[in-house]
Image 1: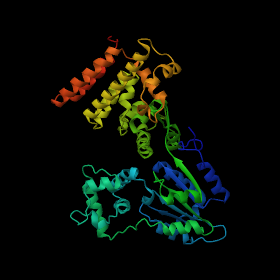
Image 2: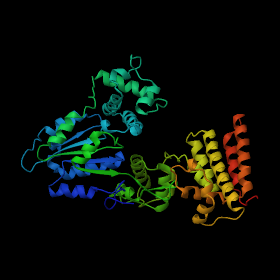
Image 3: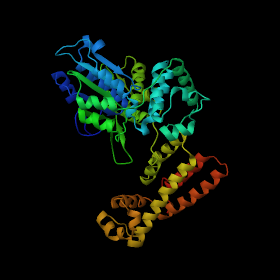
Amino acid sequence: MASYGKGRPARKADGPTLEQCLAEARSGKPAPVYFFDGDAFLSGRAARELASALVPEAQRDLNQVELDAAASPAEIAVELATRGLFAGPSSRKVVLVSEPAFLTSKEDSSGVFERARDLWTQGRQREAARRLLALAVKAGWKAEDLVPGAPRSPGPADWKSELGVVLDAGDAAFVADAARFAVGREMKVARDDASALDAALASGFPPGHVLVVAAGKVDGKLPLVKKLAAAGKRVSFAIGKEGAWGEERVVLRPILDALLAGTGKAVDASAEARLGELVGDDARTLAGAVAKLVAYAGDRKGITVADVDAVVTRVASDPFFALGNAVEAKDLPRAIAVLGRSLADGASPFMLLGSLASTVRRLVLERERARKAAGDRRITSFDAWQTLVLPRIPEDEIGAKKPYGFWMKYQAAQRYPRGALLRALADLADADLAMKSGSDERPLLERVLWRLMPGKDIL
C-alpha cells in the first residue's frame, strides 16, 4: 500500500503526496489550491500541517483564516479576495476550509449529520447548528423549516430520500433544538452557488493567497470538485487495507505511529489487530480510542490487547458478506464470532439466515455443476475447470463476472461433503420455520453452523 511519508497513513491512490505539498510550502512556491479529501479526520490533520507550513506562526492570527463546514463558495471567494493584514511581497494568506458541506457526497451525509450531533452534545451549539444548516440547505431547507410544526418541516422519510440520513431515536430532538437555536440567533446559510468561487479559480487569486480544502468524501461529479483539483494539488487519504477481497484487514500502524508521536507509547501487533476489529477504518474514532489508551496505560510504555479490551468499545460492523466468507473458508470460530457480533450490532436474524442460505445454495450449485461434468473426481486446476465446467454455465449467469470467481466458489464447495451441504439446506429451512414460530434465533443459527462445520466431517 502506498504511503505518504514516514509515520503517516496510506493514501487512496497514486499522485501528489503530503510530503510534496509541504516541500512546496517550505520552498516558498506553493500551488494556489490544495484539495485534500477521503477520510475527513486524516485530511483535516494534513491540511492543518500544511497551513502551518505556509504561514509563519507570528502571522497566523491575522493571515490564516479557517472557515467551517457551513461556509459557502461565495464566502470562500470573498476571503480569498481580501488581503491579509501582513501584506507585502513575501507575505502569504491561507484560507483553510474544513469539511465544506457543499462538496459532501450524499453517501457521507450521515457522517456530516452525526458530526453535527456530536458537537451539539459536546456543548458546541453554534458550530453544530451551522453544520446542520449547511447539510439541510442541500435539500433546500432553512432553519425555520426544521422547527417542528413548520409548514415545510421534513420528516424522517424526507431526510432519508433527500439526504440519505436515517434519523435514529433522539435525532429528531437534536434537529428541533438546533433549529430553534439557529432561528433564535437568526443564523443563515447561503445556498451552494459556486459561481463566485468558479470565477476566483478562473481569474486566479491575489499573489500569495492559498486555498486549503480539507474535505471528507466528496461528490466527484460536482464541477467544482474537478475545478479545485485542476487548480492545484489533490491528495486523497484513507486508512489502508490488506488481504484478499472480502477478507480485508485495516492497516493501522502508520496512523497509530502518527497519533502516538511524542507520547512515548507504543502499540504492539496484537493490540493493533484488536483495534482494527473494534474500530475499523474510522480515523476520528481511532484517534479518540488512542487518547483513552494513552491515559489508561499511565507510566507504562506499551499498550497491549488487554488495554484495548478494557478501554475501547466496538463500533466497527462486519460487512454483509463476512458470514458467508467464513462459511466458504470452513472457519467455524470465525463464523460463530461474526454471527454473534452481527446480532449484537442489531442485524436482522432473518437477514443472516438468508445470507447463510444463499451461501450454502451457491456451494451446492457449484459442486453439482462440477459433479455432472467430472463425476466424483475432484478438479484440481483452473484450466481443467474452465474446460470441463465453464461451458455449462449459462452466459446470462456469467454476465460481466469473471470466471475465476466461479472457480473459487467451486473450491470452497470442495471443503464440504455433498451430504453436509444438503443437510445444511434442510437445517436452514427448519431454522426459518422455528424462528417464525417465535423460537430464539441465535441458538438455531449456531446449530446450523455447528452441524455444517463439526470437528469431524459427517458424510
